[in-house]
Length: 401
Image (cartoon, rainbow, N blue to C red; front, side, top):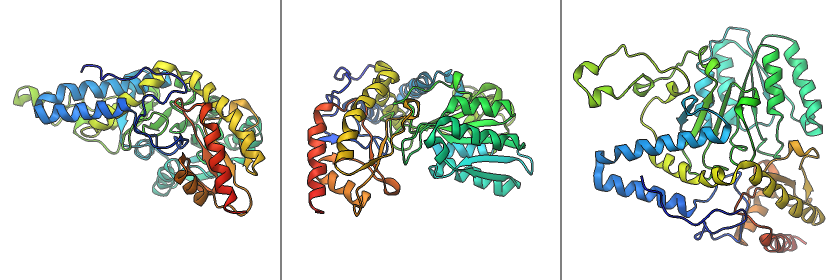
């Protein structure tokens, strides 16, 4: 498919977002807006299907592989180890139902995690008679070392089959020491599942050095795609020990051979795929993959390290100004524990959700889960917009004085 024309990518430039109404969009930790590249790419594929119907299938398949390759590149993986799924919940559930659990196995989770990385493991625990342990996050906020010491104590007790963690905590923006957790898990014979939806695209992550066995992320946040598209990476060696419970016709090797070949290709004994792609149980969300391929393009062009540094500079400027206005910052003292999310407790008497809505009416997009105000800029945000951000905050606060 021909490249959809678009403006060049530059840190701090909103050139790809001509329709964006907000003076400053700081809600990338929730949903990212569609760029002109995303809009054009999706509309182009819709046009092709309208014009060609089945004749567009080749383009759709090429787009799916482009997205898969992009997902893999952002985490340092091989595309063959990446499955395209609907969301991170589906990815976690795929692994939770494929691990050959034994009664009494233990799963280590963390308190206050987003439910996508909790519910599938709880369900597995209920089905198989597992012990599910919830460790507090607070020690990690104190220091990575303190948090890791807590995890190692739990691993020493024995019987831990899996540790599941979010690379970045959705409420506070605390970045977890994934590589160290992976090393600990492997040392004690456990596996590590990482929900990386709040990291991939805005923070460097490499599955080769992370120690993880499984990693999943959705495309609608920092990858700047759309809702309903995600990916799951499965380490090739870990995949050998899985028994997938939910499979479909595209889980087989050469699943479409009978559609383009003789009737003899329609067999019921075709082997299942090996590796992550066995979890692709049916047709894919091709428009979602078109959006993902276009949305993550700038991250591949710019690199996640420069993006991370760009966002940290933004936080370095906005954090002290908001603290001066009465907010309490939850940003980690350790640079390694910082992410693209700056979470703040609002001043006394200020409801974070209501305040976020008011900021939205004043042209500043934020989000406010669990009583925290989240400021979450990405590569298009610029320090030039900070005056507008702070003016809106002052205006919203003045209504309460």
